[in-house]
Amino acid sequence: MFNNNFHHFVYDITVNKEFGNESGKSIDAFGILAKLGYQFHTVPAKPILTVKESYASGGKNSDSKIKTFDPVYGSKDQFYGRMNITSWSNLNDREIFITLFPVKNMKIETNYHWFYVPVPDDATLLGTMKLQAGKHHLGDEFDIFINYQVLKQLQIVTAFGYFLAGDIQPINNQPARNASWLAFQFLYEFGKR
Image (cartoon, rainbow, N blue to C red; front, side):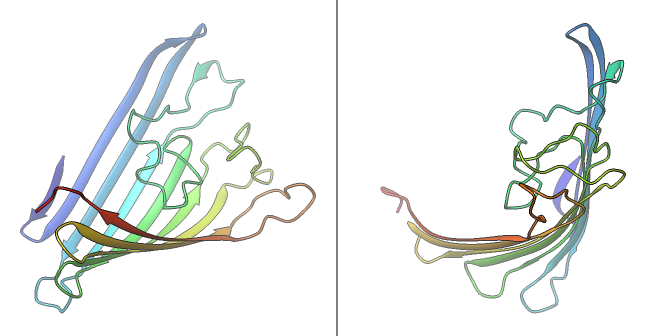
């Protein structure tokens, strides 16, 4: 179920169930996304305030069933922060975000994620990150994304992200550190009038 403007409310509810067999094991996994927001049309910049929960089941390699949700095609990096640290698999992402429209042709999106790993055993992210024993908090991420349509053919995009490491084990004998990224780009569409 999805609606971008239902009497100023925004909502998106997606439920996925995986079943079948793989490598002699039965599959029993699921993913749920629930988003609810409201646009304040009478306030300057017409902000949209939204909360979202994205959950994807996880499991251990030793389980008799495959319980780790395998991301649906096309969703690999759509919902889980701009830094793409995690995908929609063995994930609990709690998010709050605000979208603003301060001037014509400009959109500013800010969001804050709280990332948790439901089943941290056997889970390694980006090839190096593992959680401390008994811990589930991967970390938090703040992002801001500014999009300005200068002309019909020209768009300027700026983005910044900051990841605050959670209960991550040391990497190469060094404590896990926070990370940031910055992007700036021009998008020009030839032939568009």
